[in-house]
Length: 263
Image (cartoon, rainbow, N blue to C red; front, side):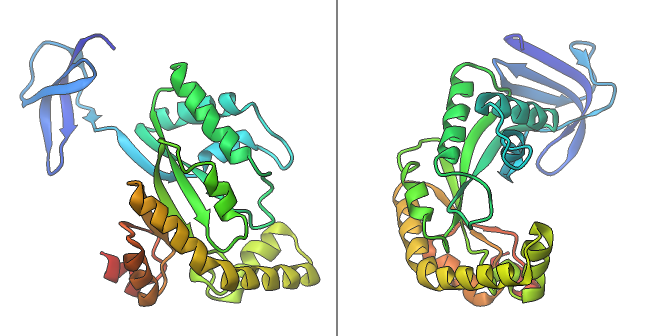
């Protein structure tokens, strides 16, 4: 973009109204906007001109990096493809989700999330990206390896958001076994025996690891200015736990009571 650019005849979306007029950009920053229609600048022909969107939670990068089970694309190429679609959607700032902790069926090997983070850094350094990229760590606190995965991101300056999640059966999003069976047994093609073993393993892990892992990650994030998000709050107790942890953002409350409490 040139040092100074003007747009005219646009419907400009502001915080609390939409005005018809002109907008001037200087050195990549909005310098001024006015109602009315001048004859200077690129004609928007009455189209909407909106601020760049901010995407806080997207797993979109994983699909480019691992398009099929067992297939891995070049990590930097995956980041670029992801970035191109993000920018084409009007998103100018994106928090790329990287999963911390393995549920045993996600198909990602240890270290792959670090590889993707390094690819984001490389692509940004080499000016390959259109959007601004930060990292959102999706921390599955009920898994035994979430802290070891988290360790390699403790000093990562691109991490700005971390969500505390527990997808074990009987928890939050999966409070009923019917929901859990549909997602894990049916979708992943597990036999009755394999599903029963998996459920027992995940419930034991949740009971053993969730509380201490949640506390350790929350303490680090509070001390280092990383915003904390809760995930799938279903009860008032979940909301209270989140507030005690210093959570600032509620992702996807799954009941009206929880949503009303965090509103």
